[in-house]
Length: 289
Image 1 (tube, rainbow, N blue to C red):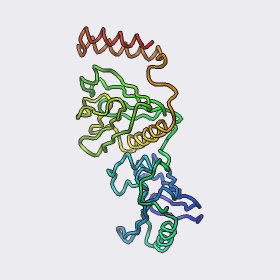
Image 2: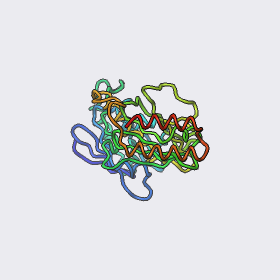
Image 3: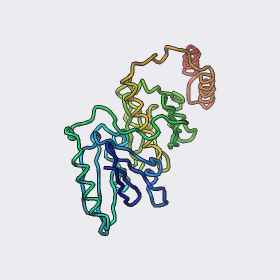
Image 4: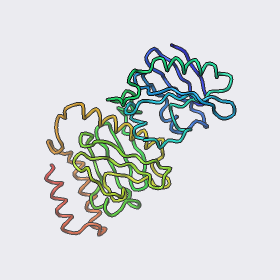
C-alpha cells in the first residue's frame, strides 16, 4: 500500500498495517470530524469494506470497524447519522476507479476473524490521555475527565433536587464498567456512567447522580461523544491493570473536602437538605480527611 485517496471532507492514507483518516477543517465539515482531527484504524480492527453509489454521481467507501475495536463507535452504538460516520468516505466521480482499487486492497487484508468482536480497543480514543481535562456543558451540570476521574458539577438552575442533595460527583475510572451515551439529537440525550458497585441505576437520568442530561443545547455531539469514548478506553485499561488502591484507601484532598462541605452548606441554606442530612453528610466528608 502506501498511497492516498482524497474524498469530500477527508483523506485516507493507506499504510502497510493501517488506514490513517485525516479530516478537513472547513466550515462544511461536521464538527465531530473537526474535533477528531484524524483516526487510525489498523487492518486487524476492520470488519468489512463496502463500496456503494452516493448522491450526484459520487461513490461511498466505508471501512467498518469490528465490534469492540473502536471506543468511539462503541459509545455511539449506532446512533450516528451517515454524514457523521468517520469511517465513511464520499469520493467524487472522477476517482471512482481509485476507490474500487483501494476497496479491493483493503478487503485483501481483512483479518480472518473479521466477523468476530475484538477483545480490546485497537483504535485509540480521541484524547485518550488528555493534556488538559476534557469538559463539556450539559443542561444540568458540567462534566470533566482528566484521564483518571470523571467529575460532574451540578448547575444551580438545571440540576434536579436529587442531584443537589448528593452534591457534585467524582468517579475514579476503576469504579466504572462502562458509559451509556444517548445522542443529544434525541429528546432524552444524556451521558450515564455505569458503576461497578451499583449496577442498577435510577431509570431517569435526571435523577441519577451518575448521569448528566444534555437538554436542548447541552452535550454537543462533537464534545460529549469523544468524551464518552475517552472514558470507555480508560475503563478498559484500568480493568486490564491491577488497581494500586481502592477508593477510600488513602486520604482525600482537604481542599476538595472543604469545597464539598461549602456546597453542602449552600444546599442546606436553600432548604434542599434537612438538618439531619446536612449533619450526617458533613460528618462523612470530615471522616474522609
